[in-house]
Image (tube, rainbow, N blue to C red; front, side):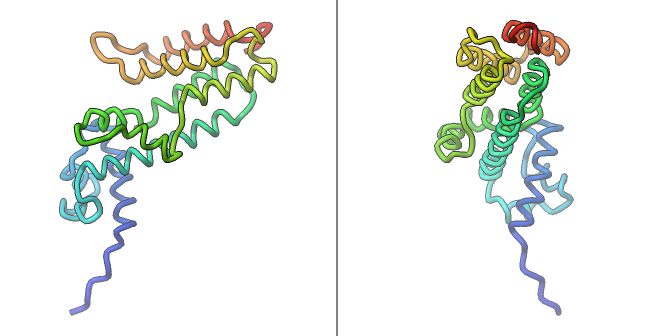
Length: 199
């Protein structure tokens, strides 16, 4: 009998994390169970436990990676210059809405066994304040003359990210605006910030 090759646990973890993201996008964080994950990946449920001893460990790893991915995406967004201010602010919004990080952090934050997953990620340098990213972006646009000199970019950075937080966590009976309405709101804010009708 030929011996089985050793299990590539790192490869298995990567495969399961990719399938976990698919499950979360389709069914939400609560829909991610080890059994559902194994079914999605087309393997026996026991294989998922070889990579992650528990659902909680899987969620922690996925949250950590998702926060890192979102932070890199936001830093790349902030580093890019130019473009219509309203469009660029909507890109910021779209990056958050496309990420599973906010839902994962919210889920772990409700867990009695988790100690501030977002604070741990900030302390480790995995992510930073989204309000800080927005403030830095607006300050750069202000230096370029695209945002009026009298605008308090720290205040608007905070308010814009607070509004984004509302959009991410809003639920019935106070739903978030649809994308078209959000784009209209963002364009109105951008118009108030821009210098001499620039956008």
